[in-house]
Length: 373
Ligand code: G6P
Image 1 (cartoon, protein in one colour):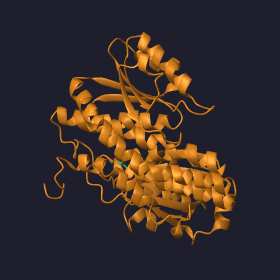
Image 2: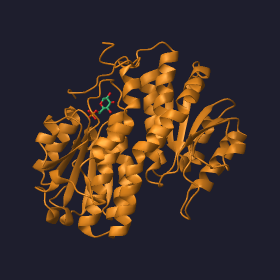
Image 3: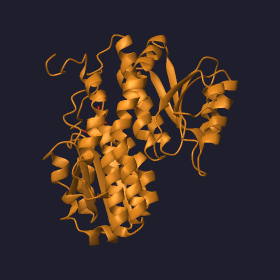
Image 4: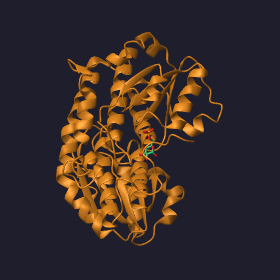
Protein backbone atom coordinates (compact mmCIF):
# COMPACT_ATOMS: atom_id res chain seq x y z
CA UNK A 1 0.00 0.00 0.00
CA UNK A 2 0.97 3.66 -0.37
CA UNK A 3 1.34 4.00 3.41
CA UNK A 4 3.85 1.13 3.59
CA UNK A 5 5.91 2.84 0.93
CA UNK A 6 6.14 5.87 3.20
CA UNK A 7 5.47 8.37 0.43
CA UNK A 8 7.82 6.74 -2.10
CA UNK A 9 6.47 5.76 -5.52
CA UNK A 10 7.79 2.21 -5.13
CA UNK A 11 9.43 -0.05 -2.57
CA UNK A 12 12.44 -0.13 -4.90
CA UNK A 13 12.86 3.64 -4.69
CA UNK A 14 12.38 3.55 -0.93
CA UNK A 15 14.86 0.73 -0.43
CA UNK A 16 17.53 2.30 -2.65
CA UNK A 17 17.20 5.48 -0.60
CA UNK A 18 17.50 3.52 2.65
CA UNK A 19 21.00 2.30 1.82
CA UNK A 20 22.86 4.74 4.08
CA UNK A 21 20.85 3.32 7.01
CA UNK A 22 21.27 -0.27 5.84
CA UNK A 23 25.05 0.13 6.06
CA UNK A 24 25.03 2.23 9.25
CA UNK A 25 22.73 -0.22 11.05
CA UNK A 26 24.84 -3.18 9.97
CA UNK A 27 27.92 -1.49 11.48
CA UNK A 28 26.04 -0.38 14.60
CA UNK A 29 27.27 -2.10 17.78
CA UNK A 30 30.06 -3.89 15.91
CA UNK A 31 32.76 -1.25 16.28
CA UNK A 32 34.07 -0.60 19.78
CA UNK A 33 36.98 1.82 20.30
CA UNK A 34 37.76 1.74 16.60
CA UNK A 35 37.95 -2.08 16.44
CA UNK A 36 35.49 -4.58 15.00
CA UNK A 37 33.67 -6.83 17.44
CA UNK A 38 31.13 -9.39 16.30
CA UNK A 39 29.52 -10.66 19.49
CA UNK A 40 27.46 -13.23 17.56
CA UNK A 41 30.66 -15.03 16.63
CA UNK A 42 31.89 -15.37 20.24
CA UNK A 43 30.38 -18.83 20.43
CA UNK A 44 32.12 -19.69 17.19
CA UNK A 45 35.51 -19.13 18.80
CA UNK A 46 38.72 -17.40 17.73
CA UNK A 47 40.63 -20.70 17.67
CA UNK A 48 38.26 -21.96 15.06
CA UNK A 49 38.79 -18.84 12.96
CA UNK A 50 42.57 -19.26 13.26
CA UNK A 51 42.25 -22.83 12.12
CA UNK A 52 40.53 -22.06 8.80
CA UNK A 53 42.57 -22.77 5.69
CA UNK A 54 40.08 -21.57 3.10
CA UNK A 55 36.68 -19.98 2.71
CA UNK A 56 33.97 -20.90 0.24
CA UNK A 57 31.22 -18.35 -0.18
CA UNK A 58 27.91 -19.70 -1.47
CA UNK A 59 24.90 -17.64 -2.57
CA UNK A 60 22.56 -16.93 -5.48
CA UNK A 61 21.83 -13.80 -7.47
CA UNK A 62 22.79 -10.44 -6.03
CA UNK A 63 24.01 -12.08 -2.81
CA UNK A 64 26.63 -13.96 -4.84
CA UNK A 65 27.92 -10.66 -6.22
CA UNK A 66 28.24 -9.35 -2.64
CA UNK A 67 30.38 -12.44 -2.01
CA UNK A 68 32.52 -11.71 -5.07
CA UNK A 69 33.19 -8.17 -3.82
CA UNK A 70 34.10 -9.46 -0.36
CA UNK A 71 36.52 -12.02 -1.77
CA UNK A 72 38.94 -9.22 -2.71
CA UNK A 73 38.80 -7.65 0.76
CA UNK A 74 38.94 -10.85 2.81
CA UNK A 75 41.91 -12.23 0.88
CA UNK A 76 43.76 -8.91 1.10
CA UNK A 77 43.11 -8.44 4.80
CA UNK A 78 43.01 -11.92 6.31
CA UNK A 79 45.24 -13.76 3.79
CA UNK A 80 42.84 -16.70 3.51
CA UNK A 81 41.98 -18.07 0.06
CA UNK A 82 38.35 -17.31 -0.77
CA UNK A 83 36.30 -18.87 -3.55
CA UNK A 84 32.79 -17.79 -4.44
CA UNK A 85 30.34 -20.23 -5.92
CA UNK A 86 26.67 -20.30 -6.81
CA UNK A 87 24.86 -22.54 -4.32
CA UNK A 88 23.25 -24.72 -6.99
CA UNK A 89 26.61 -25.41 -8.62
CA UNK A 90 28.36 -26.06 -5.32
CA UNK A 91 25.98 -28.69 -4.02
CA UNK A 92 26.08 -30.87 -7.13
CA UNK A 93 29.80 -30.98 -7.84
CA UNK A 94 31.35 -33.03 -5.03
CA UNK A 95 33.29 -30.07 -3.56
CA UNK A 96 36.39 -30.69 -1.43
CA UNK A 97 35.42 -29.93 2.17
CA UNK A 98 36.97 -30.58 5.57
CA UNK A 99 37.02 -29.10 9.08
CA UNK A 100 39.47 -26.41 7.92
CA UNK A 101 37.00 -25.12 5.33
CA UNK A 102 34.66 -22.31 6.31
CA UNK A 103 31.56 -22.07 4.19
CA UNK A 104 30.00 -18.60 4.34
CA UNK A 105 26.48 -18.45 2.94
CA UNK A 106 24.85 -15.16 2.00
CA UNK A 107 21.09 -14.82 1.76
CA UNK A 108 18.81 -11.86 2.30
CA UNK A 109 15.78 -14.04 2.98
CA UNK A 110 17.59 -16.91 4.63
CA UNK A 111 15.18 -19.24 2.80
CA UNK A 112 16.66 -19.72 -0.69
CA UNK A 113 16.37 -23.47 -1.21
CA UNK A 114 19.60 -23.96 -3.16
CA UNK A 115 21.62 -22.05 -0.57
CA UNK A 116 19.98 -23.89 2.31
CA UNK A 117 20.72 -27.27 0.75
CA UNK A 118 24.30 -26.20 0.03
CA UNK A 119 24.78 -25.22 3.70
CA UNK A 120 23.40 -28.56 4.86
CA UNK A 121 25.67 -30.36 2.41
CA UNK A 122 28.71 -28.43 3.67
CA UNK A 123 27.95 -29.27 7.32
CA UNK A 124 27.36 -32.93 6.55
CA UNK A 125 30.77 -33.00 4.87
CA UNK A 126 32.56 -31.55 7.88
CA UNK A 127 32.91 -27.87 6.98
CA UNK A 128 32.23 -25.02 9.41
CA UNK A 129 29.36 -22.75 8.37
CA UNK A 130 28.56 -19.09 8.90
CA UNK A 131 25.47 -17.41 7.49
CA UNK A 132 25.14 -13.76 6.48
CA UNK A 133 21.41 -13.13 6.58
CA UNK A 134 18.93 -10.26 6.76
CA UNK A 135 16.06 -12.17 8.33
CA UNK A 136 16.14 -12.95 12.03
CA UNK A 137 15.55 -16.63 12.79
CA UNK A 138 15.35 -17.73 9.13
CA UNK A 139 16.12 -21.32 8.16
CA UNK A 140 19.66 -20.83 6.78
CA UNK A 141 21.05 -19.15 9.94
CA UNK A 142 19.35 -21.84 12.04
CA UNK A 143 21.14 -24.51 10.01
CA UNK A 144 24.54 -22.76 10.35
CA UNK A 145 27.19 -22.86 13.10
CA UNK A 146 27.26 -19.05 13.29
CA UNK A 147 25.45 -16.04 11.87
CA UNK A 148 26.30 -12.42 11.15
CA UNK A 149 23.05 -10.59 10.57
CA UNK A 150 22.73 -7.73 8.14
CA UNK A 151 20.46 -4.98 9.44
CA UNK A 152 19.05 -3.58 6.20
CA UNK A 153 15.47 -3.81 7.48
CA UNK A 154 12.77 -5.67 5.57
CA UNK A 155 13.34 -5.70 1.81
CA UNK A 156 10.05 -5.86 -0.09
CA UNK A 157 10.92 -5.16 -3.74
CA UNK A 158 11.75 -8.45 -5.45
CA UNK A 159 15.16 -7.37 -6.76
CA UNK A 160 17.71 -6.87 -4.03
CA UNK A 161 19.30 -3.45 -3.41
CA UNK A 162 19.80 -2.38 0.19
CA UNK A 163 20.44 -5.97 1.27
CA UNK A 164 23.41 -6.01 -1.13
CA UNK A 165 25.23 -3.07 0.48
CA UNK A 166 24.44 -4.50 3.92
CA UNK A 167 25.86 -7.89 2.86
CA UNK A 168 29.11 -6.34 1.65
CA UNK A 169 29.29 -4.37 4.91
CA UNK A 170 28.75 -7.47 7.08
CA UNK A 171 31.34 -9.41 5.08
CA UNK A 172 33.85 -6.57 5.41
CA UNK A 173 33.28 -6.50 9.16
CA UNK A 174 33.81 -10.24 9.21
CA UNK A 175 36.98 -9.86 7.11
CA UNK A 176 38.40 -7.28 9.52
CA UNK A 177 37.47 -9.47 12.49
CA UNK A 178 39.22 -12.40 10.83
CA UNK A 179 42.30 -10.26 10.10
CA UNK A 180 42.53 -9.21 13.75
CA UNK A 181 42.07 -12.74 15.08
CA UNK A 182 44.63 -14.14 12.63
CA UNK A 183 47.04 -11.24 13.16
CA UNK A 184 47.31 -10.36 9.47
CA UNK A 185 46.64 -6.63 9.96
CA UNK A 186 48.05 -4.44 12.72
CA UNK A 187 45.83 -2.20 14.84
CA UNK A 188 46.56 0.92 12.83
CA UNK A 189 45.62 -0.73 9.54
CA UNK A 190 42.48 -2.22 11.08
CA UNK A 191 41.46 1.15 12.49
CA UNK A 192 42.03 2.76 9.07
CA UNK A 193 39.72 0.33 7.30
CA UNK A 194 37.10 0.64 10.03
CA UNK A 195 37.19 4.39 9.54
CA UNK A 196 36.74 4.04 5.78
CA UNK A 197 33.79 1.73 6.34
CA UNK A 198 32.21 4.15 8.77
CA UNK A 199 32.30 6.87 6.12
CA UNK A 200 30.27 4.82 3.67
CA UNK A 201 26.76 5.70 4.95
CA UNK A 202 27.43 9.43 4.53
CA UNK A 203 28.99 8.86 1.12
CA UNK A 204 26.01 6.79 0.00
CA UNK A 205 23.83 9.73 0.98
CA UNK A 206 26.02 12.00 -1.15
CA UNK A 207 25.71 9.77 -4.23
CA UNK A 208 21.93 9.61 -3.87
CA UNK A 209 21.73 13.34 -3.40
CA UNK A 210 24.09 14.33 -6.18
CA UNK A 211 23.38 11.83 -8.95
CA UNK A 212 19.75 10.61 -8.73
CA UNK A 213 18.36 13.24 -11.05
CA UNK A 214 21.03 12.89 -13.72
CA UNK A 215 20.74 9.11 -13.73
CA UNK A 216 16.96 9.42 -14.10
CA UNK A 217 17.44 11.72 -17.09
CA UNK A 218 19.91 9.30 -18.65
CA UNK A 219 17.49 6.41 -18.20
CA UNK A 220 14.70 8.37 -19.86
CA UNK A 221 16.92 9.18 -22.84
CA UNK A 222 17.83 5.52 -23.08
CA UNK A 223 14.35 4.04 -22.70
CA UNK A 224 14.56 2.39 -26.15
CA UNK A 225 17.95 0.81 -25.58
CA UNK A 226 18.02 -2.88 -26.43
CA UNK A 227 21.35 -3.88 -24.95
CA UNK A 228 23.72 -2.43 -22.36
CA UNK A 229 27.21 -3.60 -21.41
CA UNK A 230 28.97 -3.09 -18.08
CA UNK A 231 32.72 -3.19 -17.54
CA UNK A 232 34.61 -3.26 -14.27
CA UNK A 233 37.84 -4.54 -12.79
CA UNK A 234 38.85 -5.89 -9.40
CA UNK A 235 36.00 -5.01 -6.99
CA UNK A 236 34.37 -3.15 -9.88
CA UNK A 237 33.93 -6.42 -11.78
CA UNK A 238 31.17 -7.87 -9.56
CA UNK A 239 29.56 -4.42 -9.63
CA UNK A 240 29.47 -4.65 -13.44
CA UNK A 241 27.76 -8.03 -13.08
CA UNK A 242 25.29 -6.62 -10.57
CA UNK A 243 24.54 -3.60 -12.79
CA UNK A 244 23.72 -5.97 -15.65
CA UNK A 245 21.58 -8.20 -13.42
CA UNK A 246 19.57 -5.21 -12.15
CA UNK A 247 18.87 -4.07 -15.71
CA UNK A 248 17.69 -7.54 -16.77
CA UNK A 249 15.51 -7.95 -13.68
CA UNK A 250 13.92 -4.52 -13.61
CA UNK A 251 13.86 -3.30 -17.21
CA UNK A 252 13.95 -6.59 -19.19
CA UNK A 253 16.88 -5.28 -21.20
CA UNK A 254 19.62 -7.55 -22.42
CA UNK A 255 22.69 -6.68 -20.38
CA UNK A 256 26.04 -8.24 -19.70
CA UNK A 257 28.84 -7.47 -17.28
CA UNK A 258 32.47 -8.15 -18.11
CA UNK A 259 35.84 -7.94 -16.42
CA UNK A 260 37.47 -5.06 -18.27
CA UNK A 261 40.68 -7.05 -18.79
CA UNK A 262 38.67 -9.64 -20.69
CA UNK A 263 37.49 -7.10 -23.27
CA UNK A 264 39.99 -8.05 -25.96
CA UNK A 265 39.23 -11.75 -25.48
CA UNK A 266 35.76 -11.45 -26.94
CA UNK A 267 33.40 -8.75 -25.70
CA UNK A 268 35.00 -5.99 -27.76
CA UNK A 269 33.50 -7.70 -30.83
CA UNK A 270 30.10 -6.57 -29.54
CA UNK A 271 31.01 -2.90 -29.72
CA UNK A 272 29.33 -1.09 -32.58
CA UNK A 273 28.44 2.58 -32.97
CA UNK A 274 25.99 3.71 -30.30
CA UNK A 275 26.39 0.68 -28.01
CA UNK A 276 25.97 1.96 -24.44
CA UNK A 277 28.69 0.77 -22.04
CA UNK A 278 28.84 1.59 -18.35
CA UNK A 279 32.40 1.55 -17.07
CA UNK A 280 33.18 1.40 -13.36
CA UNK A 281 36.47 3.29 -13.19
CA UNK A 282 38.84 2.43 -10.33
CA UNK A 283 40.29 5.25 -8.26
CA UNK A 284 43.39 6.89 -9.80
CA UNK A 285 44.96 7.10 -6.33
CA UNK A 286 47.60 4.64 -5.18
CA UNK A 287 50.50 2.99 -6.97
CA UNK A 288 48.60 -0.26 -7.49
CA UNK A 289 45.75 1.54 -9.22
CA UNK A 290 44.17 -0.15 -12.22
CA UNK A 291 42.92 3.25 -13.36
CA UNK A 292 45.20 3.66 -16.41
CA UNK A 293 44.27 0.21 -17.69
CA UNK A 294 40.55 0.94 -17.48
CA UNK A 295 40.98 4.36 -19.08
CA UNK A 296 42.71 2.67 -22.01
CA UNK A 297 39.80 0.18 -22.21
CA UNK A 298 37.49 3.18 -22.45
CA UNK A 299 39.60 4.61 -25.29
CA UNK A 300 39.45 1.26 -27.11
CA UNK A 301 35.67 0.99 -27.00
CA UNK A 302 35.16 4.70 -27.65
CA UNK A 303 37.27 4.41 -30.81
CA UNK A 304 34.75 1.78 -31.99
CA UNK A 305 31.79 4.02 -31.38
CA UNK A 306 30.65 2.95 -27.91
CA UNK A 307 28.61 5.40 -25.88
CA UNK A 308 30.54 5.46 -22.60
CA UNK A 309 28.95 6.19 -19.26
CA UNK A 310 31.78 6.31 -16.74
CA UNK A 311 31.27 5.94 -13.01
CA UNK A 312 34.33 7.66 -11.65
CA UNK A 313 35.72 9.12 -8.47
CA UNK A 314 35.25 12.83 -7.80
CA UNK A 315 38.16 14.74 -9.30
CA UNK A 316 39.14 12.04 -11.78
CA UNK A 317 39.63 14.22 -14.87
CA UNK A 318 41.48 11.58 -16.93
CA UNK A 319 38.17 10.02 -17.98
CA UNK A 320 36.61 13.28 -19.18
CA UNK A 321 37.93 13.36 -22.76
CA UNK A 322 36.70 9.83 -23.45
CA UNK A 323 33.37 9.53 -21.67
CA UNK A 324 30.01 10.67 -22.98
CA UNK A 325 28.66 10.86 -19.44
CA UNK A 326 30.46 10.87 -16.11
CA UNK A 327 28.68 9.91 -12.92
CA UNK A 328 30.62 10.85 -9.81
CA UNK A 329 31.17 8.95 -6.58
CA UNK A 330 32.94 10.44 -3.55
CA UNK A 331 36.55 9.58 -2.67
CA UNK A 332 36.57 6.28 -0.79
CA UNK A 333 39.17 3.62 -0.11
CA UNK A 334 39.63 1.39 -3.19
CA UNK A 335 37.86 -1.52 -1.51
CA UNK A 336 34.92 0.65 -0.50
CA UNK A 337 34.15 2.09 -3.94
CA UNK A 338 31.86 -0.79 -4.96
CA UNK A 339 29.44 0.16 -2.20
CA UNK A 340 29.08 3.57 -3.84
CA UNK A 341 29.40 2.62 -7.52
CA UNK A 342 26.49 0.18 -7.32
CA UNK A 343 24.01 2.96 -6.48
CA UNK A 344 23.87 4.71 -9.88
CA UNK A 345 23.45 1.31 -11.53
CA UNK A 346 20.51 0.44 -9.27
CA UNK A 347 18.97 3.85 -9.96
CA UNK A 348 19.49 3.47 -13.70
CA UNK A 349 17.72 0.10 -13.83
CA UNK A 350 14.87 1.38 -11.66
CA UNK A 351 14.39 4.55 -13.71
CA UNK A 352 14.48 2.63 -16.97
CA UNK A 353 11.89 0.22 -15.63
CA UNK A 354 9.64 3.12 -14.70
CA UNK A 355 10.26 4.86 -18.03
CA UNK A 356 9.04 1.70 -19.75
CA UNK A 357 5.98 1.58 -17.48
CA UNK A 358 6.96 -1.71 -15.84
CA UNK A 359 6.28 -2.95 -12.32
CA UNK A 360 9.62 -2.20 -10.69
CA UNK A 361 8.74 -3.89 -7.40
CA UNK A 362 7.46 -7.11 -8.91
CA UNK A 363 9.15 -7.88 -12.20
CA UNK A 364 7.63 -10.63 -14.31
CA UNK A 365 8.66 -14.25 -13.67
CA UNK A 366 10.70 -13.48 -10.54
CA UNK A 367 10.13 -14.27 -6.88
CA UNK A 368 11.61 -12.51 -3.88
CA UNK A 369 12.67 -15.73 -2.31
CA UNK A 370 13.17 -18.86 -4.37
CA UNK A 371 12.19 -21.65 -2.01
CA UNK A 372 12.05 -24.35 -4.68
CA UNK A 373 14.82 -25.79 -6.82
C1 G6P B 1 15.91 -13.97 -5.88
C2 G6P B 1 15.77 -12.46 -5.82
C3 G6P B 1 17.17 -11.81 -5.91
C4 G6P B 1 18.07 -12.38 -4.83
C5 G6P B 1 18.15 -13.90 -4.90
C6 G6P B 1 18.84 -14.49 -3.67
O1 G6P B 1 16.32 -14.36 -7.16
O2 G6P B 1 14.97 -11.99 -6.85
O3 G6P B 1 17.07 -10.41 -5.75
O4 G6P B 1 19.36 -11.82 -4.98
O5 G6P B 1 16.86 -14.48 -4.93
O6 G6P B 1 18.00 -14.31 -2.58
P1 G6P B 1 18.46 -14.42 -1.08
O7 G6P B 1 17.24 -14.21 -0.24
O8 G6P B 1 19.05 -15.81 -0.90
O9 G6P B 1 19.51 -13.37 -0.88
